[in-house]
Image (cartoon, rainbow, N blue to C red):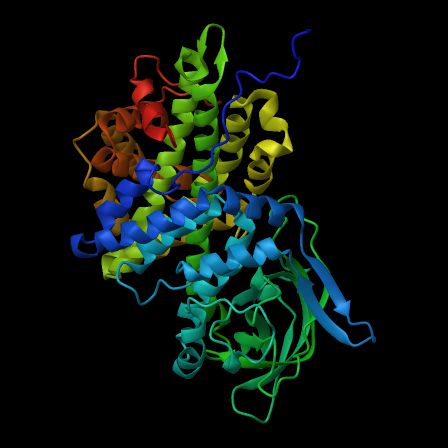
Length: 544
């Protein structure tokens, strides 16, 4: 009998049935570092539960289904009534419900709330990033609403609830609610002060009527939205409920859903307000100041989201190369491939370590930690989100042609990878925000230098990088043209300082040699061959 032509050999098993949290050593160690001992076992248990779910075949299948079946807009019912509803695949609702029940909207009042949520967000991003948008917006709306104690008392219990209710009905009848956001307009983009949406005061105190168009409205199926509009006193923040207290639908005209490169499972919409009822949040004319804490929180989520995507890309690459054989041995043992994998692993660990440090600063809440966040959040958002795209592309290449095939899951990571760099202020916006902090808020730079100073003397390359950075910061005349370089250096030095303090010596040594010491190429895989790269790769292995 002729031999079969369908025997499959030399293909790695699926990366499935593993704990996404516990097998990520950098993440697990960061949680252990930033959560107090008395709470640590409880936090590890909840993250392990989520990590096992994220690594399960069932949940991974839900992620694929949500991505392959994007939302659909239904503007009218069968009788011609305007309904403006967004329909999602059942897998989307399952994933979103699990995210809510796992506490991804409940950070502000729990012990170590931001660190445990940040770790969970990083884990859950690896399943399907699209569901993380409404989770992020809902979480980030809390500090903005706290500028109005009455509104906060009404909405915060629903936003931080562990209950997901998908139906559109009055919020007071729901145990849990989600929030979206609408700031950008066609003519303005990142320049939100150029918005033309008008807000006309009504007789009821704090109530307004909105008229205008929002070019990007995130999570349009949500129960409420924070939007910016021009009131008589200037640009102001408003809460727009999706359904009014009497059960009628607010005027929320979804004109179309954006056809995006990635993030396919998530709906992003263009929305018209035409006599839309809204409640003022904060004072008239202070819209940016009111919503700025929401923006800062969503920017940190962009960092966490990119860190999660990078971790999943590295996990897939290391897993593949650990099983695949070529040229007489495992790919992971080939010196050149090992160099590539180690370089990718360094980028991923540095992103995770910095992201969790920022979450810990939110939990601390002290004056110095708040000052550190003022520089570190936009710097991290700038750098980490920009590193995501080249990393995911390189990781896909580690799988060869298999990584270019949809079934591998790598193309979904590649398409998703530029998103967080664009959302919540693209690269130039972040760099200019860092520059503003440097020139206007000396306490922010002082907090940053105190943080990196904790690692001085431990690595000569880090010490040299700090010295060079201080030289660059000494003269900020005409700094706008070099704001990107300054922001990049601030992020890299901070990452290096954290790794020197917390990471294994082999990881810190490789990072400082490449990112700070100049022994690095323009593409991944150009690390000095004298480093212990095998140890770096082994640390990044997701499962054995």
